[in-house]
Image (cartoon, rainbow, N blue to C red; front, side, top):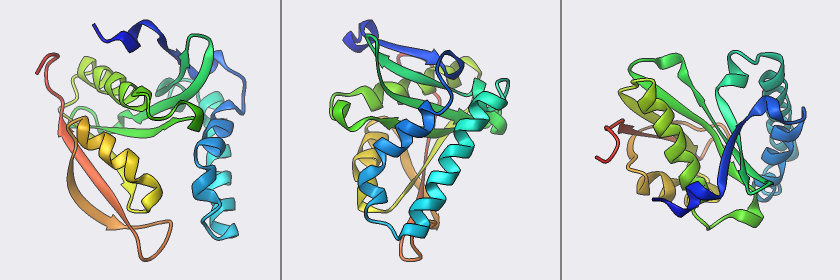
Length: 176
């Protein structure tokens, strides 16, 4: 049995205060924000605040498609997904771990939890999108360790010189 299963809890967004998701995003991406032009950083913050509002204002859709991750009783990050591609594709959404808890396997465990949820909902494939920016290199390596493979590139949003990398993988029965 995975030892992280004994200490990690994945709890519904609604169990937490409004604003927590945006706070986690802000702290998780602080190093990236410091490298971006101010207007791009402000745009991301607005998007994160709107997402946080959606988590609470739309509990049956946005709010039902994610979780806060806790290590014992400490909040360490969150994961989310977009189920609208059912049954063919489940899209991994935000998946972030606070900097103090990185490099311990928690991000990978979040992704594995999302894949388990996809499996339980009979999705055929999982997809995740990430930016080509160097900040996201650890995330790209983690997705590849989770069985995702680069499927295509799309125009980027952080910079005209960087692309969005779209990774996909099949949803296999547990144990495969």
